[in-house]
Image 1: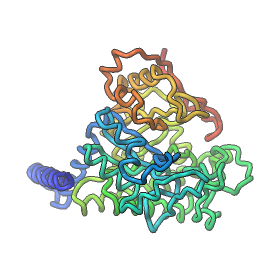
Image 2: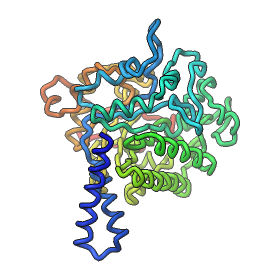
Image 3: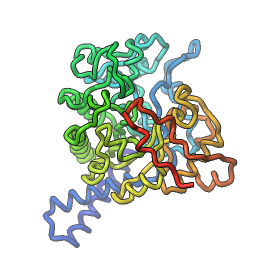
Image 4: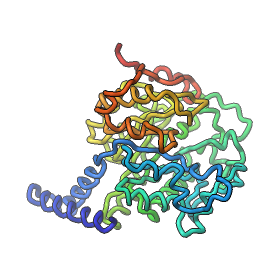
Length: 418
């Protein structure tokens, strides 16, 4: 399969280069760059009825005597998805700098980190780690597999046992220290401060390490886990344009790196982002989404998480303006309850949410915190025609928008017209 992908990339690029040369007086190098971008654009627009975000906790709660094998690992959340509407897996291997994939750049997550039985790291002894197994299996099914990086996961604010060695050794890179009374930003003292070059460099190196060592189809930069990046947000002050530009600079650097990797392996590597579905809220946390789109820095956009601010048509229109596919990120943290993020909830509500998004023109549905691979949503919500035949409910549900993350967040909610 890898050889066929490479051949297709080369054939497409060559055809596009010839086409460009026949219709433009541009220099050959420019024609080549344009052809490469067109191949990448085609890859960005491939069919993804459902994107499943997997948080990487596949191997918790081991059954007595259960062998450590790739087959058992995949059986937890992945292999039963074969035959469903799932076309892509966005696989997260852990929180910032602590992962179940093996790397000299980051730390390896073990059972001791939280006192739970997690045998994913033991897979390394079999010759492949969790990410490699996921990539191999996904490609065999014809699925895309992206590595999903939680750009500022702060579960370690509430559970010090999760705090990585790197953060402990570099406390000045964090928003604060344990016990600090931070009024906003989720009170997440352990969040990384992206205004600092050392933080941005570290994040870049982590992304580069995965991009250069794994045959992933893309990198997902998950900005909803968790939505805090600059210190002013923590105290209710506005994040500045200068700080937004620092984040844009990081994205630009990742784009250049990913394109270099794609050129060497001779097939596209995409950049996906999960962001707030409000341009205003995104900007309030330092994410200049419009600039990213204008400059061609990202390929796929998934909007939504704890909150759903606006009708899906708004984000879809933005994506169409820049020819970037948009996905509706449906999270149990919003649809069910923030206190029960992995709860199944009401199937009719999920159907209604998905169909409403499809009618707004999204390219597909993205699921977050839904891990049971036998859940009926994976065989229903990727087909709007099927959803039309199912019982469903729908009301505009913004989630419990308050000042927890951003002061005055309610101002960004734009309900649908009745």
